[in-house]
Length: 239
Image (cartoon, rainbow, N blue to C red; front, side, top):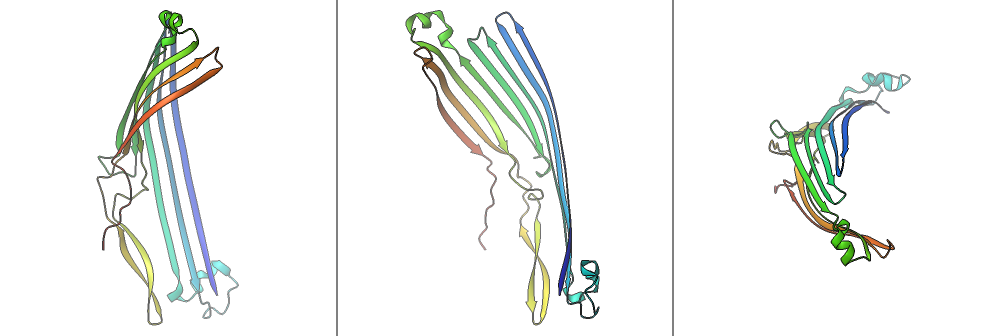
């Protein structure tokens, strides 16, 4: 006879605060955004199991009588994990006369799973664009092109792709058999790495938007170049 009981608890919350500002003044247009984000999650579990209830003479208590099982076959398992994120962000868009466009953005992110001194990273971005088709000389020279915008952008984003406690040495357990007895053992499953931090991808984009022939033909053309540094991955070490 075998019985087990497990209790699982999950808890999470998220907070977002965003503030926006817009202003139009003649040919000038400006909008800005600032924000704060925070989230938290945790999970916990406790499991108990047992088998061989012969000495108790009954299994009527079900999983409420696990303590009556053979002590050699009683097992308990528990774990707790938590993680949290914190971010500050800002963005500004400006255009003049619907011809010249400028965007700038900034973000600072923090992740609890990284070690002290490496929890936070900053990411920057910006873009410029020129709607050349709004110029009088362009309209006269190429009247069949209704709209043409040239643009370029640069930006960074981050990846926090590790689970909690991966920066510290982890242990795991297993069982082995010695003769007629099953024995529990513990071993180190991973090495500590206090230098782990945010993976960063930097992207450069150049392109254009166009429409022509009374807007019957339109499209976008884009050229991208990306580079990822401090990549987060699991590497197996030779034995």
